[in-house]
Every structure is written in structure tokens, then in C-alpha cells.
Amino acid sequence: NQDKIMKLRTGSAMPNIKKSSFECFQIRLSENITEQNYVVKVLEKICALIKLRKRQIEKFYMLINARFIEL
Image (cartoon, rainbow, N blue to C red):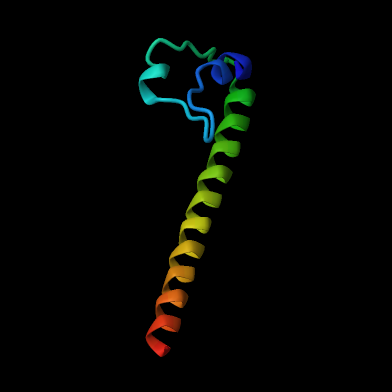
């Protein structure tokens, strides 16, 4: 499906995919429980990384603000 998804991209400087582009997009769902569990684990790791990065960014902005206040 990666090729199909990449064809949905628009824009030249920063290509993006619009939410509306996915409305008619079909994704094959596996009936294999082992495969489903693997996908869930991968997605959970991705979500955990996103949360971690958001916390890091928040702390970074707090540090930047503290430095500007010191100046």
C-alpha cells in the first residue's frame, strides 16, 4: 500500500496527504491474530515515541522561555 499512499501526496516543498484523500482508500486487514498483535505493538511503540517527543518539546520550550526571562 505504500506506493498507493505515496501517490496521494500533494505539494512540492513539503509533500503532504490530505485526510479526505483517505476516504476511499482501502486497507487490507489481516485475520491472523499474531499479525494483528504485531501491528498493535508497533503502533503502541509509535504512540509512546510521539508522547515522549511531545514532552521533550514542551521541556525545550520551557527552557527557552526561562533563558529569555534571564536575559
